[in-house]
Length: 197
Image 1 (cartoon, rainbow, N blue to C red):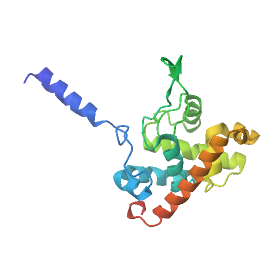
Image 2: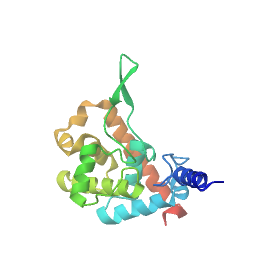
Image 3: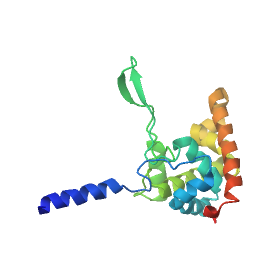
Image 4: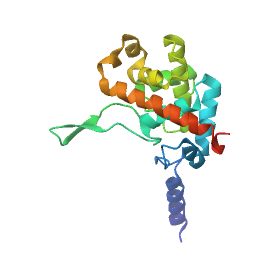
């Protein structure tokens, strides 16, 4: 085998291994917090780091990431189409585990000085969420355990949350209630599982 061919094979193997824990694929059994953490131990370390740094409980982070990306590292919003067939770009710039928008992500990078952060990296995504939710706690008075209202502020932005823009969106009120219920479920599960110790 020539050196060139050998180098290409090695390069392809390394590239196929991917980075950021999961090559974009979601863990199995997303209704079971313990199963998620057993499959992806790096997730728990990331969640605990954000919890210590910002005070956002692990179950609140997990419920929000479930809703935003289903734990898919490179999740993106769907395409918009004109005439039902002509792609016109994505619905928004949201990307990664946390579905952070370009502008909000840039604000995070500037505020934290974490210029190397990536939205498809679980550590960076949880740090972003912790940073955002900490500001929501400080500016809006939302308790850290309140997954429902944190999700509303996360989705609508803090200005939209202050204005109550979510009240005109029945679907969003339903989704935020589901996030709150999932956070309670995950909290109950995490209290009993070995992966969360």
